[in-house]
Image (tube, rainbow, N blue to C red; front, top):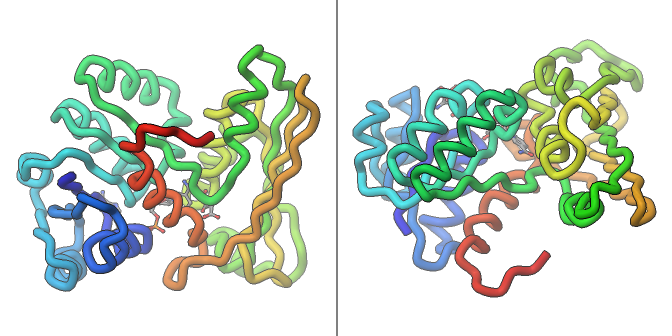
Length: 261
Ligand SMILES: NC(=O)C1=CN([C@@H]2O[C@H](COP(=O)(O)OP(=O)(O)OC[C@H]3O[C@@H](n4cnc5c(N)ncnc54)[C@H](OP(=O)(O)O)[C@@H]3O)[C@@H](O)[C@H]2O)C=CC1
Ligand SMILES: O=C([O-])CC(=O)C(=O)O
């Protein structure tokens, strides 16, 4: 499987190391990367034996089977449909882009037209399997996420010196205000009740070093309560290491014939 990568930051470099250096994706290799900053992307291309493209068209034409987006919501919006129209599967990290209903609808249409797949990894959270089962008979009643991060992981809250609730509202509002921290709320919305009905609480807490997410849900199945306490990525405290692992796991599982969960 020939993979292309958009974005050469934390998740991008994690994938380059895991796949191209450590061989953790059987039969797969990142052969092309697309980035904005030539100096860092060219260095990574050299380090991990791949080709760097500055021109998106040439990147897409480099005989790829699948493209992984690990950049930003804006980049996902700009390039997502082009990838699918080019006949390639797509893995999105910046899942917040799917909070835009018109864009999400377009992604569904284009992927059907071109017979390609879009993968939305569970990212920095879990419990999506429970929500999907719980709503099989439309009997999922409520879903919430409480995110607690150190202030330095929340760029808008750098001067906070005691535990502070910095946001309470819907997932739809949360992703607009915190596009680098609330992708989790949108994947949760997609698995459950949608971004208007999924409720979010964000806490900046100077006492913690981990990024924790508490998922709670109720329905005819009973109750869900799941908390992950994530170590941050070394170079980007906003991003949890689990988010990078989940992109790799999505790639490792995509062609399995026996599906778990
Ligand atoms: N689903 C989930 O649970 C999670 C999702 N995420 C999301 O995943 C994405 C990647 O995260 P992470 O790797 O930590 O982020 P980083 O900020 O470490 O890296 C992002 C990279 O994307 C590049 N980039 C930005 N815009 C473009 C563009 N238009 N074209 C090409 N490259 C671009 C940046 O380059 P430059 O240096 O030029 O800006 C940078 O190299 C983010 O959107 C993040 O919010 C993160 C955590 C959890
Ligand atoms: O990595 C995390 O803990 C969550 C995050 O930033 C996001 O969902 O955007």
